[in-house]
Length: 293
Image (tube, rainbow, N blue to C red; front, top):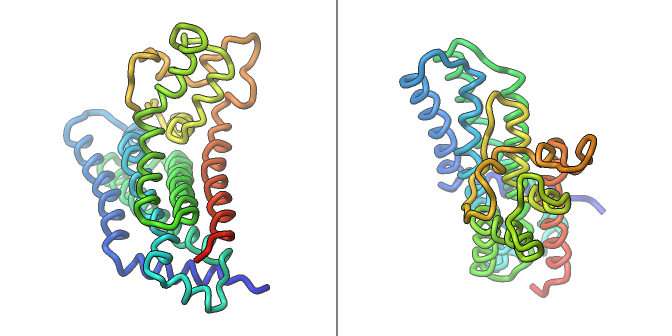
């Protein structure tokens, strides 16, 4: 059977290019990069381009998930809501083509936005600081693209799973709130219920594994390993974890003898990001295949 994923993706990306959404997203990320570099250049002395690159980590982890969720949450359900899904499926594309074509098209939107933001950072690094940390720039840019795609995958998966715009919006807002506002309550709170105390600096290994399944944590841990300085995760704190704990990686908090197990190493963050990309899309695909349209 011939796949029409590319056809759906090209149409989806073209539609996004004619909307304000893509340009708002691009503009926001470019402004973050531009204003940040100029502000640091104007206020901080004796700073290298490699050090400034890490500055992007904080605003990107805040803005990019929101932008990616907004880009993807109407991808499939929007077609169902307007009734155009029946017309689309009456043409050569089938349901698989729709889900994965939409995923590819919305992914392209986020990739373009991130690429332009990092291009601005590259130009400003050379112009203002005289150096270009090319290896760090490429690695950090690739991680940021994967981070953005991860949240696109979540949103498209949700969009394919439900039949109304309201449900899709509520679920993606809930996802963001869990990762940013409720994660400590869910993880450290569970630890407290089991042991009558919050997680110490060296907690049980199962807790470290569970805690790093937050994709924002995975991104900041990975990013901190490829740029100069540390990038700390943006998360609401309720006092169940110490400030010092947030400044350490899972491997550094491991209490066992010898090296930390593989699932606490920094590279495991890549597995976490891929997990949050693949699983929601697979669930959405499964539900969409069985939905009555």
